[in-house]
Length: 193
Length: 193
DNA sequence: GTCTATAATCCGATAGAC
DNA sequence: GTCTATCGGATTATAGAC
Image (cartoon, each protein chain N blue to C red):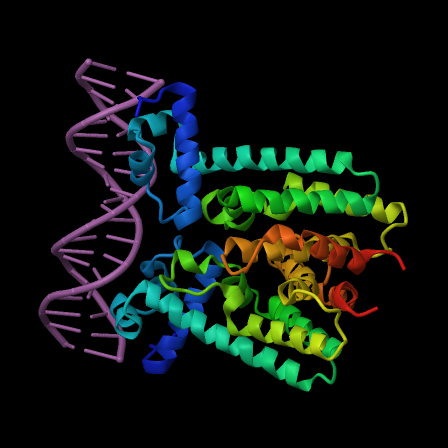
């Protein structure tokens, strides 16, 4: 394999770190593991990232903003609240199937245990977008009046749970086959009437 | 403080370990931390539990079976599917408020990262009881016909999400005030008609 | 059964050559 | 910018006295 330098090296480290953090967890992954599997030196890693925690933070920030972008695009494309919710869950399921490491690390990891001042995941951009969709729907009368936290949890909680089953390897069959039923259930939970 | 021995010492270690595992996480808690805060010696801990991983496993097994007992009792007391679901969520919320450390460690921790052969939490007793309630309700015609995984996630996913918000300290106000709305949403998601 | 002291190991981070 | 070699410190687990 050709020697990596600069941005390519940085990307290789991030990609390897994501895979190992997802497979074994942050604390079961040493810098030496990342060094070995990425084919780079310890010095290069510390040059680019400073500390192991900062490496995790770079990775987290990158993935979170990418995820927020995809969710934002899905929201923007929807015409009404229900179609926006559907689009959001489609994006989430799609990522869970195609990039399980990313979803595992971004959604399921215990970030506060290894990133000193991390904010809870539910306060992050993607989840804020999802709550906004719900609050809009409530203002427009498509969703019943209720505590927005309850409504957002009811609408998306089932989908998130299904993703966890998928990531844990418990689910039989294809997650995407459950997209419509899951959105249907979530919508019934909160829809007016 | 009086010196602890035997079963009392064992319980003190488990209680301290639970608190620290929940506050900082398993990997950020050393045996010496537990020793210090429980007021016992390293030797005593290793005598009773063998290794740090086995200590975590003892704790996990104890708490999981206690939780399964409480959920089983709630299920048994319900007359129909809806009241059983309500009782289950009440138990979960009650524990989340009164014993947040327990719920954090049992429901939210990444068990496979520190317990070598742990089964996913969704395969555990409490979650099996919850799926049985749903499958019963489907057989009785109270719940629409659908994939049981989808139905169980839809019914309880919102409640579990609200508990996570509570445990993360994000939720304003009293979780118990949301009990009825949360169950109502979950039931609408899956109910026939 | 409980204690103290310590062994063996591993890890994150740094130093300094190139 | 990237490398190799190594340090200092923390951690798990054990040994052996009481």
